[in-house]
Image 1: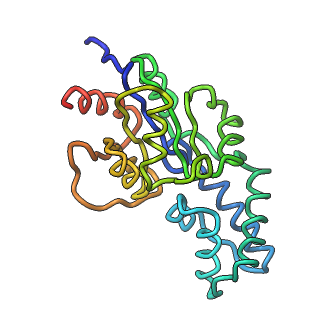
Image 2: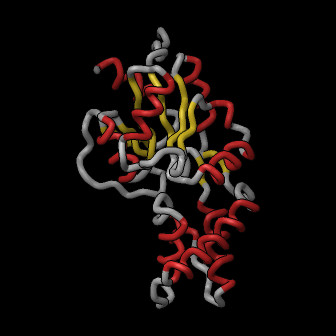
Length: 228
């Protein structure tokens, strides 16, 4: 079988819940904040359902689950700062790439694809995480939440990645409705990881598909691109 030619394609990956299982470290950071407020810790499953909405939303939900009202702006900033300080120091104590992710990236690269990252994690956390896991060099472009004036679900970060990589085609690989919205707004196909943290309902379309493991993803992209 002849390998596809992906030299005109950029494959754009989300991080949390897509490439990286980061929920254990995010859970530890949230529970650090909760314990500092003399509150009970939450389970990782709770955190998985909230990843992608930012540290503030994570903290607010953790407080809500224990019957506490939302903090005012000053208090929220204090708690978010505590969360980020802890998480930065423990950013990859337990975080790992999902099974098959590296092999998938190897295959896509061997087919000529450009790889990129688009995440709603801030740059100050995104870059250290990628460096610690040893995968930064795989990506031609890395756009985080604060890299541009707009972030996902805006399509601007995705179109900016294609502009920078000078490739006419792109696909978004994610796990949440935020990733799907960004792909739609940018006019790109989207593949959603069923093992991720998001729960996206609705019918599957040719350009909006789900994948169960990374082993299947390269061929799924190849089929979609050949039909385009």
